Length: 112
Image 1: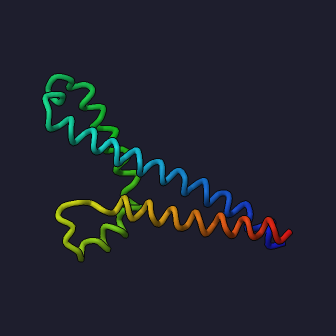
Image 2 (image 1 turned 45 degrees about the vertical axis):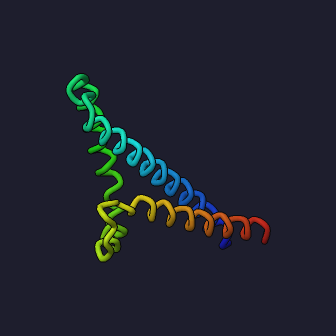
């Protein structure tokens, strides 16, 4: 009975964690691209593309904000020299949760 309830929950959890992970990775890469584009003449030569990058960055930053907020609150206590380590901590937490969920899933499957 427990297996019938827990296994679908674990599968959904793994899918949700995967979506969050990819959203954070896309946002991080997009923010780097936007930063370097703003530091060069790309910003003025390709205003349309730069505006699209800005809008995409805004969308992904709004998507990731709820997941990054607890880590940013935690990191406020430390001097990180202006580097936002919250995406890295979030990805690390996701990998740990995924590993624990995968081990639980395997254990339930082997148990029969």
